[in-house]
Image (cartoon, rainbow, N blue to C red; front, side, top):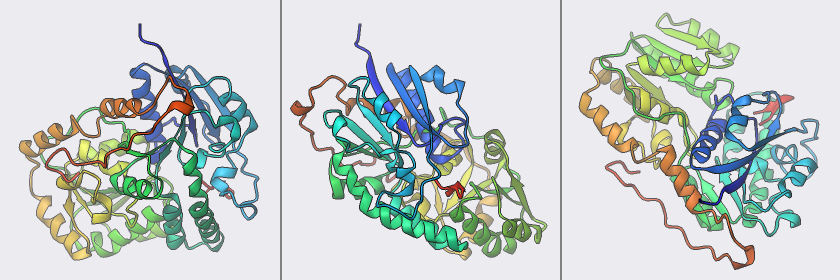
Length: 407
């Protein structure tokens, strides 16, 4: 009988329901690790999302800690997203055994360099290059107070990231992020995003509209939707749908100006999934080239054609299944080209072949587990250099409080 592998996972949020990027990666990682026989002790910071029975089914034990949203983000050197997740109770619970610890995101690393954990094997899953992410949030934010918060947080995160020197392993979510963290800290492994898709399921025939979807409360997604309406959707006599949570008043008013643009707000995950499946084209746009956009993965698993800008797809391993447009005229040209074109069986087969081996949760979980020494004496560990990720196929591979919206 194989010995049980035990692992602590410290999550920056309650990862169920799995309805936005970061918690999607965590939740489906939990499922994959549990199916691989890992006994998981999960630690969650709670600030709006409720305890979940779903998590109890996947984990040996689940602890919930209140997030300290009352902390003054102006003071101290530790970023607000980290300082607000410092809990003495968490440290006490981590010290109940000697199992390895996986910290999800820089957000959860308050105790990464704590002397009581010096002999533990510690992994950090990076979901972004966080200071770059917050810098971009600053650039697209119009509210002065939020903009100032993002700037201050970005500056702090850039200095704080050196806490990663105390990790034994960094698990980057994309090849771009791998390159960044490997160059800066070494000891980095590329672990693709965990996600909800088990197999490619693309409907036959043509779709009924062109879709853009995302969390519209996030400044980046709001700006992308505004750009697409003004520069692309309003220039074509085709049906367009924009779907996502909490759209701003400006976006609602803009969409209402054009009879061919429908705004669907506050739909649940199942509704978004159906919209992706029934679209002829999924249009995606970003100004951020760190991390990986799970909405692109979802669109390729269940949607037909994907037209994206290069920052959405470059060096993700998904480029070969996307049609790239970097200007409004290029988006318009490609939308016209693929609007009338049925999605072929051959294209579906190519995606199936690729996703059977790449972005496969079972394979990804096994790659992660191979890198974690579950039985060891820390002083005897010698970390072996990890090869840079390569492409295996034809594809080159908020603010939550404010208070209520700081992430």
